[in-house]
Amino acid sequence: MSTTIKNIVVVGGGTAGWLSACILAKQLNCSASPDVSITLIESADIPPIGVGEGTVPTMRETLQLIGVDEADFIKSCDVTFKQSIQFNDWLHAPTTNQRHSYHHLFNYPHTPGFDLTPYWLMAEKKHSYSEYVSFQTAICELNLGPKRMTDRPYQSSLAYAYHLDAGKFASFLAEHGQKSLGIKHVFGTIADVSLADDGSIHTLFCQDGRQLSADFYVDCSGFSARLISETLKVKFVDKGDQLLVDRALALQVPYSDSDKEIPPFTISTAHEAGWTWDIGLTQRRGVGYVYSSSHTSDERAEQILRQYIGEECAGLSVRKIQMKIGYREKFWHKNCVAIGLAAGFVEPLEATALLTVEATAKLLAEKLPTNFDGMAYAEKSFNSISRYAWDRVIDFIKLHYYLSKRTDHKFWLDNTDPSTAPDSLLEKLAYWQYNLPSASDFASKYEVFQLENYQYVLYGMDFKTQINDITSRFPYANQADIAANQLSQHAKKMSKQLQSHRKLINNIKQYGINKI
Ligand SMILES: Cc1cc2nc3c(=O)[nH]c(=O)nc-3n(C[C@H](O)[C@H](O)[C@H](O)COP(=O)(O)OP(=O)(O)OC[C@H]3O[C@@H](n4cnc5c(N)ncnc54)[C@H](O)[C@@H]3O)c2cc1C
Image (cartoon, rainbow, N blue to C red; front, side, top):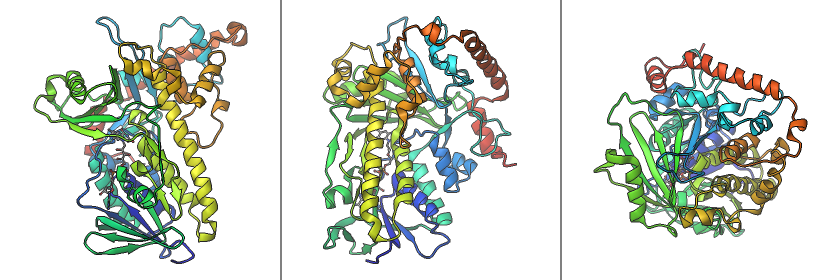
């Protein structure tokens, strides 16, 4: 082993492996520099998990960073645009004449010099929180795409992310990573691993007898965690007592009508013992039910999923996926870092997995020491930042369940039992009962979710913040009304400039994206 880090091996060719390899190759300038090489090894016999169709807006920055052409990506990965997550029936179980629904938008609430939140709290609730504070609600409800044809790649006045075909995305990144970023790719199933005297990884032995050695290893081998767990024995911190879902059923539902409008948001609908995701791609929908096996049976879960989809799923077979909820005690150990499902998973709500992959790979590129002497500090710092970020993700996911007033199933009663919520979340909720959430409640640079994300969920879920003397503390109700009216006028203006979501996708496929 050299004293400098020159060779990196990434184990795993799922989205975590390819995204990490591309980010590292770009940041370490592998295509131009002979000093650092990245090799990705994946097993031809162990397929990637192939789910994970929702992303968040950071994906735009990441794709731009690694030099992906946005139009090529949209054409190759059956991409559609995502501007929000619409949450249905999370607050109350639906009744025949009443359903609850709210948006967690990607556009942050509009703040014309001041926060509109207290004025929404004081106003008669003619508008939902997201309608009051952002024009993006109207754009979503009209099924409009977020870009005008004049908007440049990755640019728009509306924040957006993507829905994508996970299998096609991994293949797309594989081609891009090899052609443009100098990543070497080999197939091989790792059967054994030898350790050096200091306990770090020395050599990977493949089933076919080939060997691979590197200075540093990135474990993206999925739930098997081939290096970080099987070899290095880093323990798993189980968070199943806080996030109760542990199984998923997934279905791909082809469109019966190829012109059907595509919602530019993910639809998340709560059911008796979990929730369904519903993601519209260009040729099909990806639909799945995430549930708790302690609260329902697989048969009942399949029945719920099929009822939700209706006759379009007749004859389609369901894929069952087991989920391990939690994360590694350490993400970086000796000369190995785990990224993706090998590092942990907290369930699909809010699409946090690829977001965590992006953030962790960027942090690794920043922290990777050029010399082994810096390794112990880099490991310690990386682990403390990563653990902080994972715990904050758990807080935010739990918030969605904890605020529910559903009483129709033990699943919801257990989810709203304070003993299942992290103290870090309970503390904030107690404070926000009488005080507005503010940016200072999210002070770390490594917060994954910010004030605005919390505001959408808290007030979408009818959270009550009771402020003493609210009218005298927030005396600008007239200005707030003017700002809210301006937002609704802006929604009307924007809706004339934007085209339908499906039309936008079709136009991008035909004409590309304006680069001037
Ligand atoms: C139900 C469900 C829904 C999800 N939805 C979302 C979502 O909407 N948004 C989101 O961001 N994320 C989502 N995720 C998470 C997302 O699917 C994963 O984070 C993402 O696909 C990355 O997976 P991965 O690359 O870590 O693992 P995998 O895709 O499992 O890839 C593992 C790779 O390791 C290789 N490998 C394994 N063992 C060996 C070995 N011994 N030798 C060599 N190679 C090996 C395999 O060949 C494979 O290439 C979801 C996950 C689940 C379970």
